[in-house]
Image 1 (tube, rainbow, N blue to C red):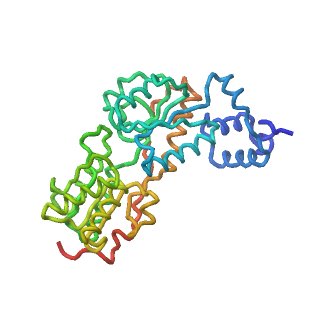
Image 2 (image 1 turned 90 degrees about the vertical axis):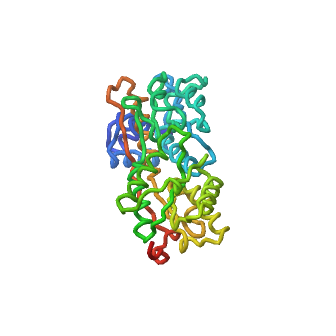
Image 3 (image 1 turned 45 degrees about the horizontal axis):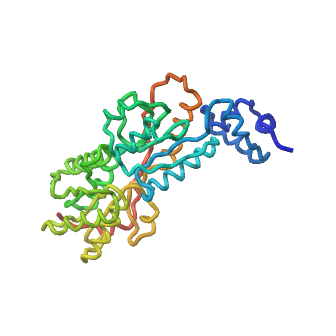
Length: 343
């Protein structure tokens, strides 16, 4: 016999309303209660009638996720975690790739793409804060990243300034003084690279090291090839660095590949720190020291914000500005035993 919502409520010792909230994600439920309800759902094999529920509520049960690059390991992992979070709320995710194109981002935000969705999670790269604020929004929106004009939408991000400061400070603590940065992107409006550059420069100045423009490598994208090209320029300018903070793990991996090709040993001759904690960095040689954002927490925060807006459309609570935690994971690419000596 098919189990009902009331059966689950009785098994978990909660109200039917609480079970409904857990299934739909429509309200915040205490973690212990959520686990108890989920255990009852699993034990009884309860499956909600999603079609009937959506028809009654006037919703589709579909949300959109717009990311700049599907092939980016960071965004691919984050997308997978967001899909998991959506599934827990019986939501289906449609994923779109914007390639950081302003028109593609604008089309999704205005709902002019023709897709029927209940809400959208988007990581905008090209639209400025002013454009985001002035764009018509027919749907609940959650932003990932830096572009968040006050009062526009819920936003989830990492403290990029602090994270970059910690990464650079780690390199300086190893005795490295010629610390370069790879990853500035002046052509984008998302602000992430600028914040990481700010943290990098702040750490240098605090250590009494004057930032040098020639050691700040700009890139077209955050891929391995871009990291290799930027590393080549740094090595060719006559003042080779002894450490590099790369604004993504892909950039870091490209820089390490180029350094190896040029006969520069990592970490002995060049210590390298990346950002994102992608799988490739954990299994490369050397393994990569990196800033690890809590991607699962980012996914949970973003999906809860969106669910709250979808299921409580008349909610007048101001948009949330949430910061996910991060940590510096030290691996072989900055092995302390290989630290540089002197300046």
